[in-house]
Length: 515
Image (cartoon, rainbow, N blue to C red; front, side, top):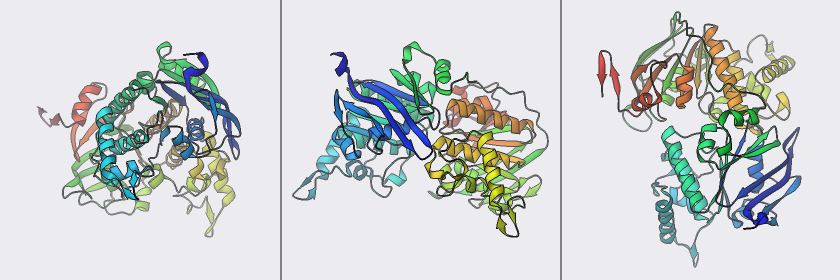
């Protein structure tokens, strides 16, 4: 194979601009046939933008794209599909009320005399499922299946269209550790079959495990391309952030004081079945400690947080915050005592069509600082937002007047964390605070949470990331099927032991272990 033809896709000198920001500044990326090529960079480095250009969602201001050495014009996703390029987006593009099978064939239906040939379509999908180990229930509605299964549906959608170049945008952001392992295996199988994969990520472990080569972007510019076998995590994180990054959490031992949060026999009803989603959960969180609720997604953590923050009513038990019974208080009343970094930043964290400065004062606009005589003091709001943007390094095209929807996922997350930590409440409820963030931002958020702890705040962390659970928490509570099945000391436990508790294979009773 001669040098020119070894690349199936070449993106040469691509430049893409948005108001106030150069998202891609003269970037070149070359993908070889049959390789897994990772695209690494901080939040807002321009990774998703570059892939959206390749998939035809955006038109670049400059540069050219070649496929198999020939220059091609990609005006929209249909052009990309015709060139056998497919993409799994970070926020899935599925029709929730359709079945899995209908989602897979949507837009690429086989018809005969105007009738849908579903039998043949099903046969083709089943063959693909078996070939790549992508098993999903084809007749289930998308709204009823797990996120991991939805992702498999997206991958099958690409394979059904005979795509040869597969783009994965942050594919592991919403998966459990087990699902991540399965996805890595699926990607390796796809590459073995001759598919070429572009894989956007900022999780260094995953890149080291599956990628053959890595291209690093920083602030919209190309930094370099390296072979994974010739590099390591520290070197990659330096390339990505532009400075050495602390990959471990540095913190002094906790000095717990008085009880801030007391939860007793708390129950929250389930929307899916007759059992309680949260069943008789009791524990305390003290000032000056980080207590983490660990567990595999879907074991009642979400419902627990909804019950605690007032988004769902309790079906039993009580919650005391700073000695006050808040079991029946409204969300706003509870907000006087707690900050809440929610799990779903789009649904519960931001009003996406508001500006950044409006989002920053969502819970505080009625305070005297921000209003006078019922009128909002807009200059004060702007000054406050500008301070937080600088302190937390929230990157956006137009500063405080940027519409939240147009920001990258990681910067939306930073905005929520800035707002919540600045509210200075005795309890911080942080649900997956670093979901979708890069190493530089994770390092910063972790240091902020530790600083809050050291100032005497009580921190309740809910996380699915084992590394985060083990390195950040002072005590670990494991939740399985809505119950607390173990309390572990992060200094004395291992990821393996934690995994057994999370999978329900192990429980601790007061007074002995039972398998």
